[in-house]
Image 1 (spheres, one colour):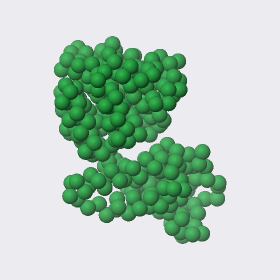
Image 2: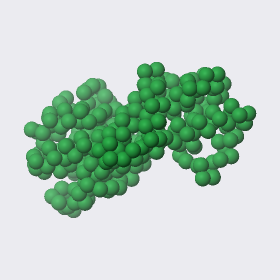
Image 3: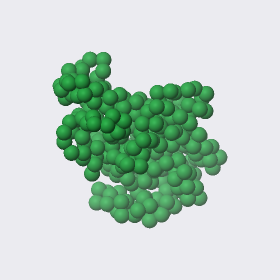
Image 4: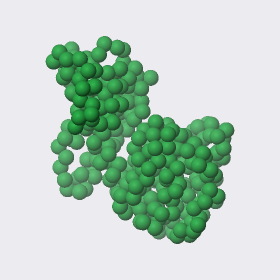
Length: 307
């Protein structure tokens, strides 16, 4: 089947740039779906690991994107995406589709779109939510910013990694991701406050969590991260430093949209208070930030699990 010039079959050639905690399982989902995937990473050994799963490691960005119908980037931040994009541009085949699944600023995504469009290519910003577990299971929430025609060209590919939704024009995917992270960051902080209050006031914090599940306070964060807090399990899924980056991007987007987000400002300050001490801990370490604010109060009695 042909849609806007790209054949949506398993013969579609994909280049995947960035093999980290998320990129590795996302590539494996694409391979299981039957796609041909070439992989590249600055640390080449991370790409080499995927050879056994059926991917073809490339030693350079140019080699990776040469002949690719679709390029997917999953990189640390906007400036790195910009650098890799510039390395790739001379080698991109005509009318290639670039899907950036990294978390960047809306303004950066819009610039990537302008750069690629000027060179005759399509761009989609499609950040994700769901963490490493969602990437492994192929159940990521994928928020896509693109024209409806460009989105139709790659919807099947995105569906191999999770549940894609078109949320607006280029740049809108990043807005949706920021809204997601705003809710995640704030809810993590509130769940930490609720559990610490329960214990400090004499209740059984684990029993309180069980009691309020199923009511209006129920959430995936109360379910998953509430339990992690009770177990003091801060082994990273989403890291504190990544949450802080997202919070700063949220505030930048709010400034650009001329709105004030007072709760987000406060949540950002709470995460910044542990930026140097626990940068690579899971963002459930919002509990640790709260405990630093309340000397003598500590949820549970187990040791902190940080690695």
